[in-house]
Amino acid sequence: MEVARRVLGMRSSGVVYVYLAAVAWSTIAVATKYGYLAGCSPSGVLLGRQLLAALLTVLGALGGIYKWSVVLDRRVAFIGAVVFAPFYASFYYGVELLGVAREEVLLYTAPLWVLVYELVLEARRPSPASITASLLVLAGAVAMASEAWVNGGLGLAGFTVGLLSGALYAASIYCSACLAKGLDPLSLAAGVQFWLLLGALPISLAIGAPRVTTGCLPSLVYLAVVISHLSYIAFYRGLSKGVDAHRASIAATIELVLGVVWGIVLFGEPVTTSFLLGSSLIILAQIVPTLQRGRSKLRVECTEGTQRENTPA
Image 1 (cartoon, rainbow, N blue to C red):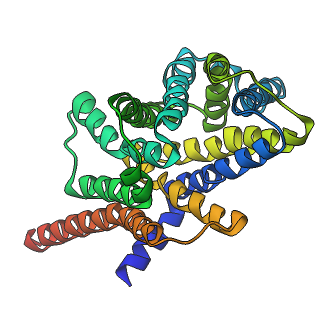
Image 2 (cartoon, one colour):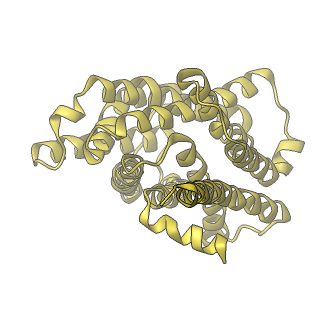
């Protein structure tokens, strides 16, 4: 009962926005797959998505929806071009070297990387709950990719690039959390997508000549509107409401579970024991920080109650 009450209490907090973003992100593979089936190349999907996303940013700013002052802010440009773009590059290259399943295992070292950034840059020591949640996520990702992880080789280059993608993913969340508390979330999300186009251009050329067909336009529009804009608006809204970087990195991992669910529902992929085990660990990781906050709040209330009792009337 206590667990249910704590989880339901998230409705009033910003973390629900992060979960909404993660739900949207879990459909990226589905939309991308439909794009490939319609004749788009991988570089065509990436470049087409970012071109449309940048165009939406410009149109939104001209229409007064987004603020030019935020879109053109040098800090937003830094996150988009210097943090997000290398993250995209390392992720795509990691997939090429390792395959999707093993790359995602290293990608989800991100919560542990966030703890490292907080320790080094803020001298903030990680709590037992945050360490436990991070390890549960990593164990869940390993379990879900167990077959691919055991059967495939893991070279030093692939491991390094995969680990780098996790570190850069964490950096994007950490930097976003720092900015989200002082800038308009809508304009921040749009600005990052605008500057991310600069990174998408060389990445697209590196992974092959872009090919776009009229049949894949629905996928590109979906990726640009729902993923690049709406999902990141929800994500930054959650951060602006006080969700810290580590909690956001944990919440975002629900994307991995839902991504497999879409594959089962839409493409008839089998339900495996490894998926059930891995998803259970990742879902458990979502609950651990909530219980920790509940115990901390109870401890504070008990301390305040004891102080009032000991105060002379």
